[in-house]
Image (cartoon, rainbow, N blue to C red; front, side, top):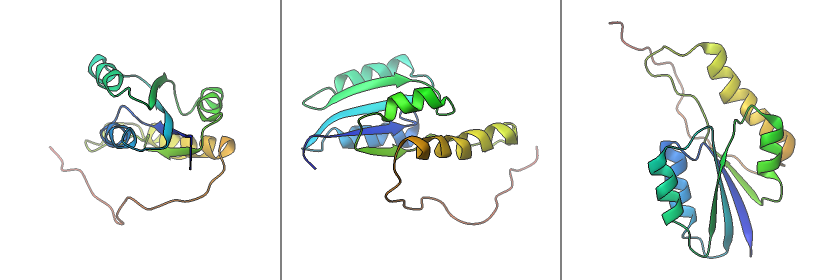
Length: 131
């Protein structure tokens, strides 16, 4: 896929950062759009150091903002969706988790055709310990 571009949602998170680092090594990739709500200064510095033949553009925005997502997706060849809310301490409202984890992907699907998905989770429930 010569001259392709990629949007990585959740690019400021653990998985998203790693994916951006790996994508920079792709030979034919021209542009990476790294989307997250907020980038810490050290993330900005790291992403600016990754600039090579592949242009890395940091886009601050919310995946629940359809206009932001539409602009971020425009002209991209691939979207890698890693944006999510993970609540291991059971302190984030369920509505927030559902909005980001489900509505965010639905907003993406409205602006980018779905082609392939792979499962990255396990089945079952996990209870946080009570303190």
